[in-house]
Image 1 (cartoon, rainbow, N blue to C red):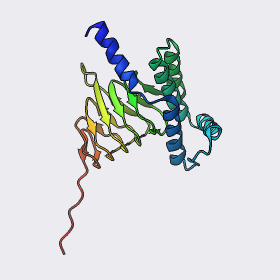
Image 2 (image 1 turned 90 degrees about the vertical axis):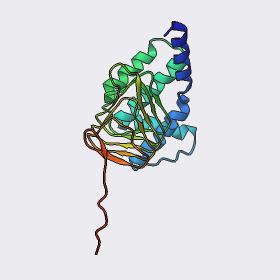
Image 3 (image 1 turned 90 degrees about the horizontal axis):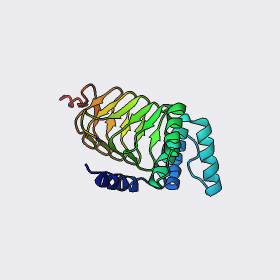
Image 4 (image 1 turned 45 degrees about the vertical axis):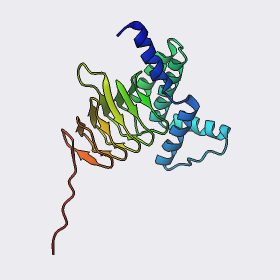
Length: 202
């Protein structure tokens, strides 16, 4: 790929990132809701105070905010500072989200310890438990597309350019190497859909 095409690819990718304020507000609301706390913010100062409070009580939310800051700074072409924000996110919650990853507003990261890299897209309403890896196959930069309202369990691995359909559930320690249909629960390594027992005849 030529330098000009590569620069254009990065410009197009960074243009898809949500705005910093929009993303932080949505992330704060979903984080507060999952924590059983007030998720309706009454004003901008109230929202800012709640985001600050969440950053103080939740290392994962702080790291997620640092990722959002990194993405916003990169979109503006700011040097050095995005790398500092990335390192701080890794230090405070072991959260490593690569530069090509697009995370839509309103994603809940439960406790950190998450790695995502490559051409990955994570839609709104996704919940990511600890020790999750959203990674790549060797020699291929295409990563997972995770549609809205997916739940990813502790220790799960999503490998390569898989598509996880809306509302799907990925079980703890599952290794996903194939697409997952919307609303499906998958478990195991490699991950397979959970079969519901057929009704017993009387």
